[in-house]
Length: 381
Image (cartoon, rainbow, N blue to C red; front, side, top):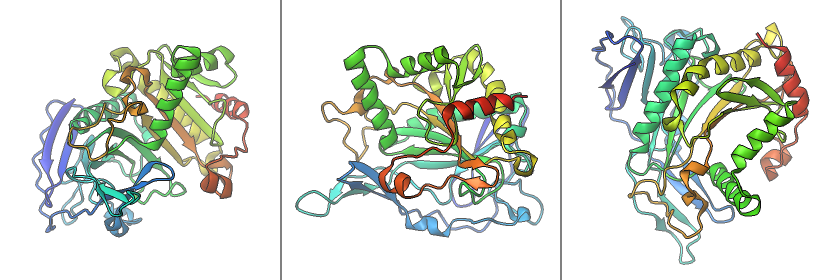
């Protein structure tokens, strides 16, 4: 893998990742663009003890452009895109409309009771274009290309984990207009959060409680139990296990774990890396076969869950030093895994987050996990 870094016209970084060591990246972005101005803030919700982002500038982001104006396609004569080169393997660049951006700053309180707390929305958000082919999807990549994307996710995790204020790195892909995607070109995103996300905090708390009550590691015990039960296992490789979880939230949801527990992509061994493309591409292709040819591109979210970095940066505005805070649990207790799910529950029917899910965070799943796993086994290649 060859890595080449450059700058876009407004100062944002762009990084090319090429399969060939002979690749040369010299194209210059000549668009007349002002410097990026992102006004990100995070605010604390005292009832839920969660941080949320406030990002008014994102209202102006690109929305469903025509195919010939796609900002992720290579640039060509007369039409410059976000990617100046005429072709590429994988390109990563700073999001023009980031949810989190810039250097950390001090947390401030707006009221005497300390209920209204805010801080700069520090961090970094990146776009990862998986291929220059506008008509493709991740499932269309070959194993060599998919391995390159895995290596890109790993390299970006390493870089972002060293960024001031970043406490957790999240690599993910949204696919399909039903999910809310505004660009149809095959791509994903990476967020460098200035705090540990609420979902991860809950996982770490559950891991700590399980260790106190039963001993052992909760992630290990869950994966072992699913492998022993077998009825929800979708794919078993030598180094990966994919299964529909016993209490799946979504109609079709698969969790993919490496056999050897590691906290993040940086710690993933070479044998697991080598096997990942075959397993993951097969999962994506099964998702595309779930609902027949008429709906051959199933909308989905694919999300890597990685351990936060202890305490984040020394400049982090969010206090992670509270005694007993689950974010301070040993990183090696967390298990790297990927969660893949679709909001489609049947041909032509979507699973909407309505009153129970959105209002109370209580999911109601119309598809029994065992039935979902059976269906995913039936559509194997």
